[in-house]
Structure formats: structure tokens, C-alpha cells
Image (cartoon, rainbow, N blue to C red; front, side, top):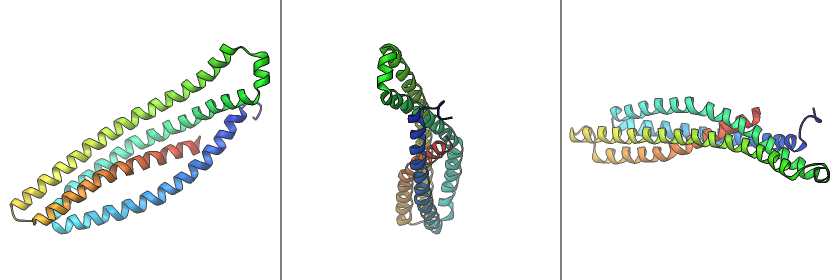
Length: 203
């Protein structure tokens, strides 16, 4: 096994795994507690003003979970491939430098440059795929959040015009939705990072 593998690749896999496990545990503890407390509190506050204001939040939550379910496993798979490509690239570079005398004695400069470039190109290909997924993910999230803001604002103004809620409730609800907008992007980023780290651990 050790004769068939790059020493640098094995070392990189070991280092990546330890860091990825730590990041997974921290993200789970940090994000899940914050999300559960904030979202339940927000539903209670909005629902206490009028239950109809909580309806768009429920629809948004379903859409958000569907986005997570669609994109996050794909990001995890790309993260696993990226971890493997990174370890190959690092292994090639480390082994070339650790055996530099042998490389310079028996190799050809153009061949060595091509060998290293091939490893870097493979790694960059996984980075491009990952960034394409992240771009589509955040574009979809932006649209979902805009629909949430529009629907809650329209519903709140309609209820206010019908004197079903006070102007204070309208201000609170819109403020909470704007806060949810920013928080949802943070949660999505943290969840994608979590699954990329899980992919690294699996690799």
C-alpha cells in the first residue's frame, strides 16, 4: 500500500481528516442550536401576531429544506472528489521535492512540470464544479428569500389594512424576515461546508 501511494498524499489525507472531523462537530453544535432556537422563536412571535403571517414562513421552510436536500449531498460528493484531488496534487508536489535529487538526476524538466500541472488541473476542475454548484445554490436561495419577503410584506400590509394586525406587528414581522434572509444564507453556507467536510472525512 505505502509503495503504491505518494507519501505526501497519505499525509495530506491524514491532516485533512482530522481538521474535517473537528469542523463537522463544531458546525453541528453551533448551527443546529442557533437555528432551532431562532426559527421556533420567530414562528412564535409571528404566529402570536396572526397565524396567517406564519403561513408564508412554513412554505418558505419547505422550499428551504428542498434546496438543502437537493444541493447539499451534491456539494458533499464534490467535496469528497476535491479532497481526493487535493491530496493527489499535494502528494505529487511533496514527493517531487522530497526526492528532488532523484528527480533532477533522472527526469526531464518538461515532463515533471506536466506531471505537476496535471495534478493541479484535476484539483481545479473539482473547484470549478463546486463553485458552479454554490452559485446556483445561492441564486436559488436569493429567489426563495425574495419571495418570502414579498409574500410576508404583502400579507402583513393586507392584514393591517383590514385592521387584523397592528402596525407594530407589521414592523416586527418584516424585521424578522429580513433577519431570516441573512441568517438563511449563513446557514446554507455552514451546511454546505459541513457536507464538504463530511465528504473529506469519507475520502
